[in-house]
Image (cartoon, rainbow, N blue to C red):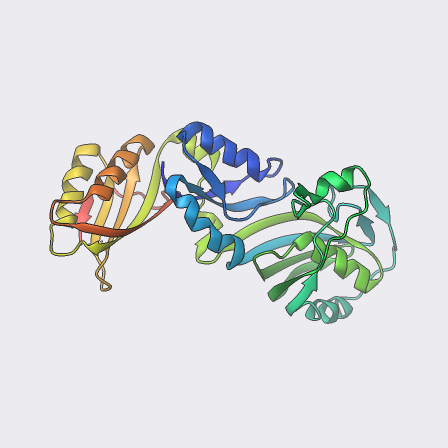
Length: 301
């Protein structure tokens, strides 16, 4: 397996554990495009092999969407349910006040990371200092909150959908909301549903890997049209029992959808990287994902 991988991280596992798992099964360099706390589940983008270089844009320039469950009336030293919970107030806050306060977070804001976070301070993650109760200076950072939508509110439980920039901490937003309302708040659950154009429902699960039926979508740029590239793909797909299509796009590239067993897909990808004799490949994009809509032949379009 090589390329970008959309993966559905379960709650209870760290992003590093997922990275290490893929290192073990692929025997290649692996990184991720933005950590998810152990409490959280949802979309984690991995880069495998040379595609780790593609992760920078997700770490610094992407837009991410979350579903957050927040509990009002109490606070946590970790800003989530994993920490020490302290009751602050039992006074119910009206929905109108919550809506008004949430609007104050929209746009570009200054946000301090949680003390229990992976933000590096003098080369060490902040959580190492926090565990030792050492005081550290977590300087606020500029982040963007594009949209906040209230899904449901039933005191003390508040459910939100948020679209934010890279670097924004939903735990910090929950804690800051509680402070502004004067009742305290902490994050009780978090699901990342989208990163840029990639959605959670496309993401692979451990069960998909176990069943060993996957899909990748590739785009090949360069001298790839008019050189027999699609028929080259067709012949190798037939040989390797790969289903999908190879299609010429208006921008001069070739798009390839491939479904099958992981080992066969990787062999197919190696052939795509070589291409037919007259082809000259300048750039290759590959995204591994769930095979949601199974096909049973390979077409040239």
